[in-house]
Image 1 (spheres, one colour):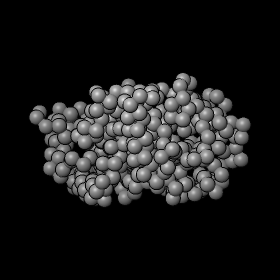
Image 2: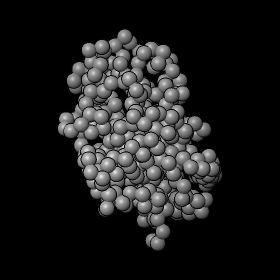
Image 3: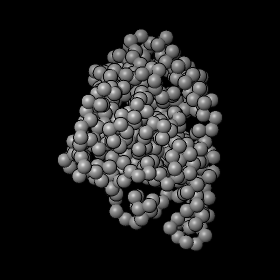
Length: 379
């Protein structure tokens, strides 16, 4: 095996060379603590503020509305718990969905243990929520709606602007986990009435261990960790300056020539789906085939183990993701695939192919050839 074909960009992405180049000085000569008053400390502080402005510019926010975290999971925790604890005297009801990332679902489960009421909205067979269902579940105690922008498994993009409009109309804060959306769609927090938005650098060709949370001016959060006064007293801990520099450069780069990049990803996705349909019987493409992330393909193969497929593909140098959580040790089928109506059998026979900018049609053709060979061996 000489070549690695990477089809798991929803899990993580390869850091862009220019991102690494931008980070290197802050891993070596520019090592100052941003809280220090001398020159290398001021240089670090200046670099942080430059990255803050870069992120704000991309999502049409103000720089002071961007707070740096360790990643998407911390951003989700800070947004949801921050609102819950701050507004608990006003209400204790939060609305989310059954297909959220565990960073949201497990945060909500924790809040349930503390006396909060959580409504988990159903989705249809494409993974889409019902706006009427959302409206019908709003009560006078509802303080937050948290619905992901795009699903990490099936790629379905939710009607975010319409959700934001509903939240604003009812005077409820709206948080969206946009970890999969950043770099794949254009986002305008003002136009979409988004109050809080989570992102993670390593999903869009930046470094791991760094994320950001957008918090609309005027939205108050309770702190969820104690310590110093960094990030305007909201997120304690010495700032990860190299990571912050990296995420700023990454978001800048990923939105350069954006339309051209997305056009290529959509063409590859459509080609992959076409080839799968033409070469295999009894398959099912999961999620909304049109309203989905540009590089996402989630497919179920009847009577084939997704996990075995993943391992056989790995032997041939192809990296994909299985449609079950078994590889993580939980032994359970994907909660997302079950929520859209798949049986355990179909959920456990699924693969997620998430394409990136370096992938080619030749990669897909090799993938299809390998699948044919593997399926023949299965029979």
